[in-house]
Image 1 (spheres, rainbow, N blue to C red):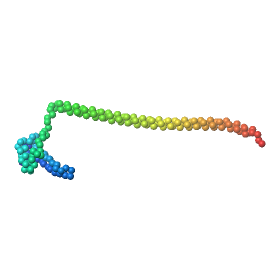
Image 2 (cartoon, rainbow, N blue to C red; image 1 turned 30 degrees about the horizontal axis):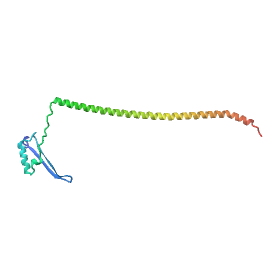
Image 3 (cartoon, one colour; image 1 turned 45 degrees about the vertical axis):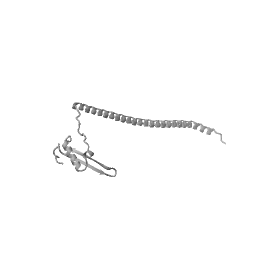
Image 4 (cartoon, one colour; image 1 turned 90 degrees about the vertical axis):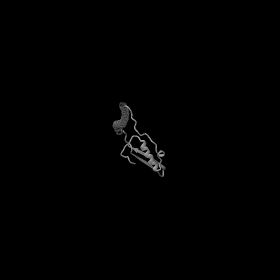
Length: 163
């Protein structure tokens, strides 16, 4: 379009139309310039180019303001930025504390389970030991009773009348 090296006069205009299985009649266009605004001269050249292509500019395009607005006082912007960074850091700290609390609770739950399992094993071994001691004591009593009865039995047999 000529003037491509002049930021005030150069432009690139893209226009597309089409259709596919999902959408019949899609299309659009974009006007690129190097300058921040479109001069009336460039806009007139764009209208002429679109008229030649039988695609009226005013029907398919609208002028939008894509400039970045100045935000204001840099000190105020730094303060806003610092506040956002601090807010993010606080949220990160809270998340870390939450994770630490969960991890600690999981560890406590694991330790508690180990203690309960150990106490259960100790209880079973204690019950087994007590049963074995009771059985050993009963056997000792039984053996001592037999030991006392044996001589009496022998004497009874010795003095038993014979026929």
